[in-house]
Image (cartoon, rainbow, N blue to C red):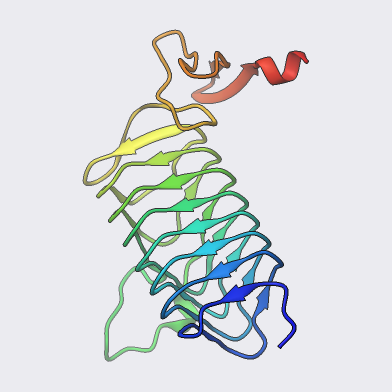
Length: 194
């Protein structure tokens, strides 16, 4: 078999799935037909990817995560162990609601902590950080740190995932951020000045 990605012998890759080069799919994972997975991703043990799920490049999905239909993970998203995505707001076993799936989008560079739950229909902004065990029920701003049940914003984080200080600077990189109209943006970085 000539393929540009790695799949463990216990993984199931259905015909018609699109998987980018350099991606690694580990033990007991299942990728459905029509799923799209980008390059250089890592899918840990027991990961499920639905046929209408879309996963960007360099995404890391830890063990026991199901990425259902209508979930979109942009480039460089991190999904911690056993985090949960949903796709129907009001599920019932005896009612078919496959036409009621709501899109959930996680923008570039965002991280979702272990055992966090993401209720469908939300947008998680770029580089946001969802704390372990948090339950996200509404949209999350870029760079926001969200914790608790239900999740509330408890700070801001940098692109590298470090909590910003009171001057909105990253203690690790020195990057300076600015807050305007409730949204945080990168104002300056050492990388930009080179």
